[in-house]
Each structure stands twice: as C-alpha cells, then as structure tokens.
Length: 433
Image 1 (cartoon, rainbow, N blue to C red):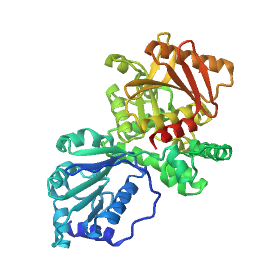
Image 2: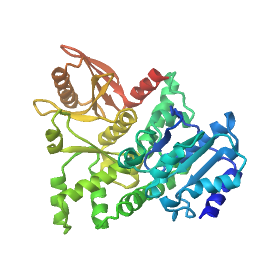
Image 3: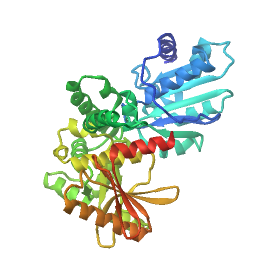
Image 4: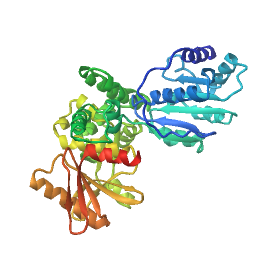
C-alpha cells in the first residue's frame, strides 16, 4: 500500500494543475486546524483544493511540499484507517531531506472509515497543514466531533450562485444599465433552468440532463444506499424520488409513509426520518421547519424541502418544472442557504404562510417569493400574509421577490420591497463587495 501512496503523490506532483474558473472564497487557514470543504458531489470542492494549491505554489511552497491524495482513487480505496500512517512514511521516503512545511490535501476523505484519528495526529506535527474535502454533512457533526475536537474550520461548498454564474459568463452585475440588464435577464433564464453545477456550464446543452441525472443516481447509490448500508435500497430510492417531487411544498412523514405502504413497502416511521437525514447529509435535500421557539411545534408541523440546484429538477423531468413559482422559490432558498443555515417558514396567527424567515444581524428578515404580482388577487394574498407577519414580529421592511418586477408597497406601518431575484442577489453582492 505504501508504494501505491508514493505513486499517487508523485503522479500529482508531476502533472500540471488543471485549468479552472477561479471562484471567490473567504477561506482562512489557521495553524493547527484542518481547513475542511464539504458539500454535494460535483459542486467544485476538488477544484477549490486545486485553487488553494495553486495559491501556495505561487506564494510560499514548492511542489515537493504538496501531498495531494484523492480517496476516490481505486489505488487508495482499500487503505484502512489504521494503516494511514503509511502516507507519512511514503512521503518521507520520497523526500527525506524536506524540512519545510508540508501541505496535506485529502480529497473525499470520508471513504476511509475512521480517517479523523489519523488527521488529528497529522495536525499535531510541527509545520503540517491539512486541507480536507468530503461529500457528507456528517463531517460537520459526528465524524468531526469524535476526534477532531474543534481542530477543524469547516466551509460549505455549493454549486455556483447566480452572482458566480454571471462572473463565469463574464457579465458585470455591479453596473446595471439597460443593455447590461438584458444580458443579466438572459443569463438568469438559463441559470434558473440549468442551475449552477460547474461541469454543466462547460458542456453542450444536450448533455446537461445526462450529467445531472448521473449526479442524482450517484448520490442515491453511493452517498445513501452504500454509505449507510441500507436494508431496503428500493425504499430509499422511492423516498428520495417522492421528496424530490415535493420540492418547495409541504410534506409530512406520516403522509409519505401512508403512500409508501400503499405501494407495498414495510418499514418503521423512524426509517423514513433516517432516509431524509441521509439526503440532507449528502447536501442534496434541505428540509426546513416552521418558525417557532417550541421544538415540539417544529417537529409536529409539516416541513418544506428544497433541492441543491434547479438543474436537477429539470434533468429529472419533474412535474414541478411547469410551476415556475416553485422553481423560483427553490432558487431563492439556495441563494439564502449559502449565507444562512437557520432558515424557516412562517405561519401567521391567521394561518397565512410566508416563505422564509431568517435572522441577519440579530434582526428577523421576512421574504415572500412569487413568480409575478400582475394578478391583483395574487398581490393581495401575498401582501396580506407578509404584512401580517411583519406586524406580529415587529418588522418594518419586508421583501417580495419576483421574476422581474420592482416597486415599493407602502403599508400603514412599514413597507414592502418588491424586487426581481436577480437584483436582490446583485444588491447582496454589491453590499459585501
């Protein structure tokens, strides 16, 4: 196994770095802590590692100081955790005179059961720096907590946001004139349909569906069925398909369970909850609960679920693709999720729903998403729900996000900003830039 590790180290060092689009990031490595990138497969974690390696090579490191290992590589898949020390032996045999800092890049490390104990040992080495990636949210919780004990800085990686998509297409969103707006609207229409997975942006349209369907199957088989050794693989697939169909809609495990039992499946209710957790761990599905201080109320009320990327919705040819408002809502949720982990939906005292509530600088933010307000009845309904939530929570300014409408609605106390999603995103980016 040590010889295989040597070969992997040298193969990387002797090959040129791949050419890639440079993503903006705010990763801040710290001595004694592993910098960890987590997210769904194919969101660009490995590319970001290459970007970090490129930064090091341009500034303070030689290629001999870089140890990059991808544990998807079949040469490393049989490496048991108790023998991971051979990585250090292999490196020092290759470079016995190397006495400078060593930068360890371990890609998709979750494939090695018990990896965290070896990484914790490496972190205790003088002048060692560790960078990790993984395709499981459990790297944020159980696996990290078991041995790392706070010795990791974790950053989540998602498909391109709309702002990143514009940057990839070389469209300037900071100075929006009439001509620029036309480019942005065309880009938004494509982003809304095809999503922001990096690979999809570089291939012909005809290949998009095939690639995204493969992502779906890989998450199902490798990140759920195989990773958790599922007893009923077909049940896992049925749950994943059902909740994918329910994107941006209310769901309950009880209703889902009744439907599955009518199809002949046999299971305990807790099993359904586990499968939903697996979908969330894989960064594929994001359930949110009602806004409440009561844990019991959050657990007993219906949940809403969102998907990692609109492109997958289209690739799976789901019926929801015809419901443009739900697609817009899913897109908005993922834009918010990039900045906020704690997002809820809100129910007013009269039972009216507001799509999203989250806190920013300790202040509640209320957002309603609607394809268009051109229908007076639709505007009345959306405004009524949002205004009621604002009164109940003491919020002065609420937001309704649409496909392409912009105005201000003055209330008796406060106001509602109506903004196109693309402008809302550009305003956020301008505020942080």
